[in-house]
Image 1 (tube, rainbow, N blue to C red):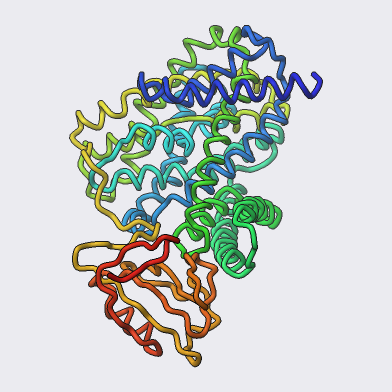
Image 2: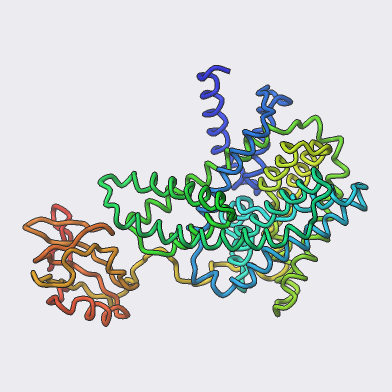
Length: 502
């Protein structure tokens, strides 16, 4: 295919996928299913007739897409929200995947007649819930749950991919090399997780330091910088033997909960990148599958999907969270929200590329299982939440990691004058780590006006216009110890947008 038809087809498929999100919101069908269906229709078995059989390219695109999806999920994760469920989420993400792998393997042994190595491989591939599927369904459909279920489910889906990737690669190697021992996987997994966690935190702190101090002149370069640092985080961590997926997710959490310059632009950009990644990943995987081969595995795939949804997933949740005093309704909701998505399909390409004898059968089975899971669980998740009594009409009241000033009738407009000997001179707005409830609205400097951002540096004789909530008055007094504060009273905007006291 020459470049022009390729670009035409790419633009057309992306445009149709974006338009399909309207149908998703209107009819309640998860958008991910529509993306995959568009890919299947455009493929060699569909009217589009695009012949795509490159599993290696599909895996590469899937891994890159997953990197940015996990990073974006980390950016949107508020530490104050996930902190109370951190231990639960990590136990569910790891113990839950192990239990789900074993129970799914039992099902593959009983239902499909697989031998144990192949059954364990299938169990590992379909064991993890999918961050893209969970984030998409929960957020686009406005599902809000009580009892901190929502952050628990999202934390699990964002952090259980590393163990699933590790188990899939490990069982693939065991099939190829029967002399290898499964016991050898345990210390290797612990080592990968430790390096992944350390790498994620270290690179997250590095991102904060670089973004706040590089002083780029163009705002758009900051989002390019974060994209590059995300790939650097994954690549370096993976090269030293750590788990890159865990690293990028943790780096996103660290960065998203810090004060950084141009934070709103960075978050919005990565939200768009995450959507593009989801669309590209599901389109490519839809192109890779041959729909004509699915009827041959339909009954086996349906049986395994039902076993996974109604047996393996609930058992993994009950065992992983049995020590926590949660009600049956809450546990059932967590179990039902364990959607499978593109990650299992991407994982199914590993044995395909490694030359496992039954890898094509595994790929088609996994594809069918994902279709059933997203359709059945994704469409009914709101209904199940209401029936179990865990649906919340409004999001739980939590502190966001996005800085939002607490504006109220009691808030004050103050002017702060910075004298030439002030300790604030030379510091940037982001360096001050302003408390919640304080907003620097405007800086008056040398007869002009500046609307500040995080990289704005304070100069002698600056006059700051501050919006201060009552809860931040003490912090303002301490911050401006070397400044003179005076009330401005009611304000209005001047002809050039400057703040004027009335």
